[in-house]
Amino acid sequence: MLMIKILSTHSADFEQVLQAVADIEAIVQPQDAWGFQTLVESLKQDSMHLLIVYEQKNNSINNTVTGYCLYQVIFEQAEILRIGTHPDYQRQGIASQIFARLNTELRTHQVESLLLEVRADNAPAIALYEQQEFALIHKRKGYYQTPHQPAIDALIMQRLYVRE
Image: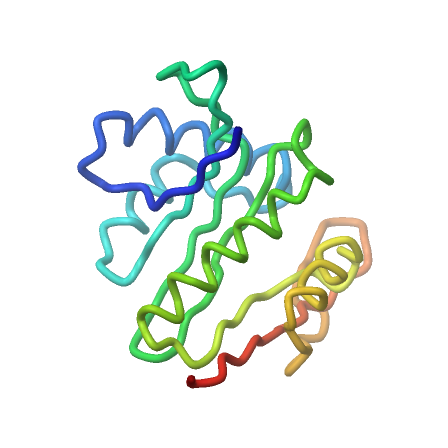
């Protein structure tokens, strides 16, 4: 069973959960993974929040971190800074569940738009974001530089929230 919650910096398992996120980052974002210390420093800012997806096993207290979404809210604007799902759990709808929970959180805080950046060569992520009502609003030419390889564009995508 999956459970999604916002990680509290006062949580007893805070460091353990952040290490699990850093471990997933290293797998899914090998070119520019955020490490444990970077995550700790980011979460010291009041505007930063981290959604954690846990797989609960047999009502056990020992939950496995399967995915995450680090985002920032500043006034009516939000931005996803990091998002990922452990490869063992990909293609199971976890990212869609993260977005469902994130959208609820953002509407509660009267957020009007949500931004994210994605590598132009990451077709699965782009397809997911388009499914989640994101639209391309800007392209940063040659933003991602890797030695001995052609530069990759960064796509800036945005989702707008309609006020109800």
